Amino acid sequence: MRIRSGVIFLLLLAVLVPSVWAQAGYYNPKDDEYRLLGLRRAQQAFEAARSEMDRQQELFNKQLIAEAQFEEVRRRYAAAEVDYHQSLLAVIFEQQYVSIDRAVKFQDEEGRKRVRLTIRNTSGGGAEYQKLLGINDELFRRLQPDVVNDVYVSLLNDDGAILGRPYEAKIEELRFGEPQTLTFTLLQDLDAISVNLVYGGGSQHSRKILLEKDASFDRVVLQSQQFAQEVELGREATYDLTLELFSGTARTFHLVVLNLPAPVNRYFVDPATQARLSQFRFTEGVNTRPAALRVVMPQRPTEAVPIDEPRSFFVLAVPRERMDALRDSEGRIWTEEEIAALGVGYVRLELVPRGAGDLLVRAPQLYHQIEPDGTVTMLVDVVNEGTRRLDNVTIDAEPPLRWEKEIDPPVISALDIGEEQRVQLRFRPYDDVEVGKYEVRVRTTSFTDNRPIATEDKIVTVEVRSPPNWFGTSLLLLLIVGLVAGLVVFGLRLSKR
Image (cartoon, rainbow, N blue to C red):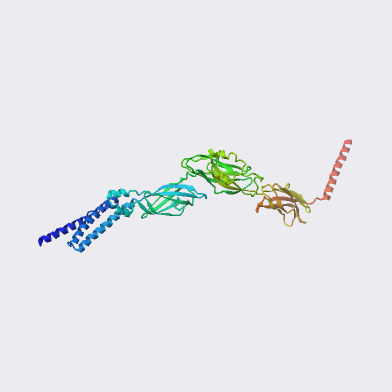
């Protein structure tokens, strides 16, 4: 009986000591920092718990231990298995990483800027961990360490605003060695963007990248925000241009204008230095640069430059080696289909010549003298010195109170470019007007293209003089004559003596 009890005690000791050792001796505070070592410890603890579970299973089957004791061993085994799987998942998901393979900017057939983004799963260390830890294939396949699930991709600008459509793209599974490509439409035209990635258990990182240009396009893309302008004759207008290179080689390009009438002068400038341009080259690492086209309108409308008729023309960026195709372009009208067939970058612009009336008022004399019962008569010449017909030219005057005025004609219905007409004005003071100087304001207004045109007012000075005294004047004249005669007689008598 004592021998049987001793055997049972030794068996219980053999069961309990390894389990206590497994629980108390395998945790290390550094396991959270060095997860691979923590995984190794958790694996050893799990294997020890599994061996202990097998031994306890045999003893329980032989009814050498109680069911409660066996359940406790099984609980510890389940806990060790959970710890092991948690450590394994922590290592696997810690090593997951999604990288940006390529980001290529291109322009579609409708002129929209788009980005072709290729991302890759670089979590390729699963096989090494499997070999290092000796993990069975079935468990590893079930955990799928080489698959990143639920990858969310979005494009951002420097302010953190989403600038791509779709706003956020999702990839259900991104497998190792199987990169995937997403295409976004740019809502803001930039050369450098940030790619934001969210994946796995909430891992997130954002990278700012410089977009590649689609070299297969092999041309310069031109854009202008002010592509349609109205320009007055005699004035200058500026079309802003953005030139973006889509080519694998940095070649020299010429800027060419087609279909712009010869009377309209044109030249290109660098907006930064104001230097004139005829050809340009993109520098290393710079694929976008600004330019400006300036057009100078003629002073007068011509048959080639009629007023108010829109005129479309094109600006081309032509490689230097392909300029031979445009040698006979002077004086020729190109269709957009012919320009597109050249295979070069171009932009369509529009010019609307506008005229503006300029009213000139000439008054030869602005100072007049009259008697109280007199009348001022003056002439005013109105001339259209602008580049558009003047309508409803109105001449008005503001004489002093109670003065009468007459204007002939008071309104000129139309005054063509360069035309001149004469207007007569009469001013008559009231009957008992006092002697002195008076001012009359002459105002001229008109309309051109339904816009008012005003000129500087003319100020006419009228001096009202008192009428001459004929009796006094005659008496004074007689006295002067008598005095002269007396002097003559006195002189003659004096000479005789």
